[in-house]
Length: 220
Image (cartoon, rainbow, N blue to C red; front, side):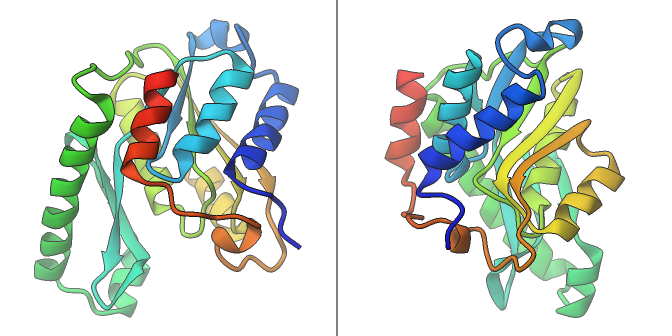
């Protein structure tokens, strides 16, 4: 049985978890204003609900997965704004991915990152994260590569406190991120014993399109 009806249901459950931990309204005032950052594209509908429930402004944080060339859905790392990159050395070794292959995947994803960033923000400057409490939201985590980069990007832009919040995640990934210290807090609604894929824990996991992200940011 799926843990979540859809991304909006996941957002409501995640917002409840965050609120129960004190993250609501002015809760982040001791370490700066609260800002919610959705990971495009699937994390943005979840983040929309979280931002509304926590009464916080919403923005995107631009990150792109680097897929293994022979298995594009499997992340071997991720890139973010300002040239930030994280690689999973074990996956790179396992699939014998060369430096030239990594460079080609990164070049392609960097182009997409820049294009979508310009589209989503439509000329607006990113929210100022200096001194802020940044709540980074995605619709789930498998390897956690994009989430790790997102945390690094938020810190690079001056966030004083980073909370990584997802509805569902693989247990090993959550433990690895907690141990790695990329986030000050990791908040997860469900860590299923048998994690299949992020979409496998949603009854409705319809694709989120670019225009959906634009519409959410415009009304937020």
